[in-house]
Image 1 (cartoon, rainbow, N blue to C red):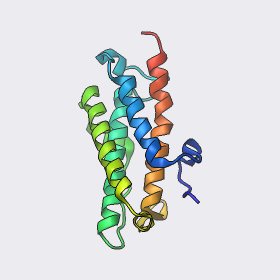
Image 2 (image 1 turned 90 degrees about the vertical axis):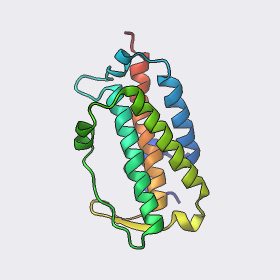
Image 3 (image 1 turned 90 degrees about the horizontal axis):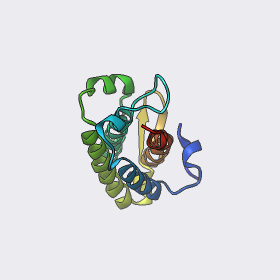
Image 4 (image 1 turned 180 degrees about the vertical axis):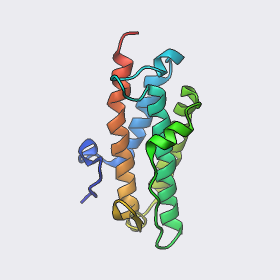
Length: 162
């Protein structure tokens, strides 16, 4: 039975690693030919721009991928929470193209790691101050669902006329 994550409703019963691979390809295809102006558009008033969404996706791949790596190599690893808005504010100068490339590179790196894991590896535990006891498998499912949460936002931006 798959773990329940804050993004389970987006992932459903899909296989998470294959979903991650498809998400990366879809986001790359979607944003490949965007102009700098398109990256600065948002899907709704007051919401993040495409550039900010891509920065956030890259940061999430970085943070959650690091958590998985630490759990796999440090016994009794305790993850730290992070504030996504504070992280976005710290990297407000990152270009959209760099954010998109960082997301793709980090996501593919995570996918490669996750594909190499045994079922036992995926059950390695870690703790989190907000979520309690988790597993590497929970992280994998969270990343896949998180990407699916943001993908429609990018698709909506792509479908909005200039």
